[in-house]
Length: 311
Ligand code: NAP
Image: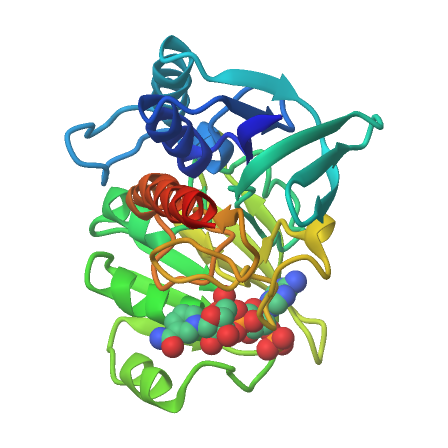
């Protein structure tokens, strides 16, 4: 029986591993990929993490893993297919049939940015194609960029980028925007934001970095070409919770419901990072969640021990 199984080895999971080892807990981290780091692995330069300005996401992820490993965290490559929360233990089942029994689980599986499916989107990710305006916006100071989407995130990204960039195209596949009216009004009040409704991005072009995007009108099919240096895709995220249906409470967008203490509504199950309901999904908040999840787990364990002793 393990003390804690951490599912996911991004910044939240690895931070939880470090805090759990420092609390002398027996820890296993289950990771889907043969490398750790989650979303940051694909980030060329991390510019907004305190004290680490300019570090590559891959280097930072490597440091995180080294830290957790040096403290004695154990890593297992596998895909979790099911969790069974029983009265006295939790069973974590992997897709190869292996079952790990544990007292606690910390879910740190993150969320995946939805892709628009444009030609060269994947190839130019990190070279002008970005899924995070707060992380990468500063690299586009004085340049022309496009934001894709019509929800709150897209419009807030457009506002944020309009303070940094020379020109921002806001491209939406429909005329109507989903974002709150107040945010729409703020967007339409900006001189350097151009709204392009009823367009999808078919192709992104650029030899080494993004230079152009080819758009298609969704009603009349006409093509349009725009010169841009960056393209920010904000069409939503998909939290990775498929193996959890019916185990813990999940909101309408698929995120596990928990506040800053990272406790779910099931005893012994905690959640850290982008997969939790929260306001700001960033490296720094993911790392903080890892610490908070372990702190809550320790508090609950102590409380449980006191109750058992008193009985
Ligand atoms: P969202 O509200 O679901 O909006 C997604 C946008 O992307 C929609 O405009 C959608 O178009 C578009 N889209 C989806 N798939 C697309 C595709 N394949 N190609 C092109 N466009 C596509 O997502 P979100 O903006 O990420 O927000 C997520 C949730 O967080 C929402 O509930 C939002 O209200 C909330 N949020 C709230 C705040 C706030 O209160 N301040 C801030 C941020 C986020 P369609 O409209 O045509 O489907």
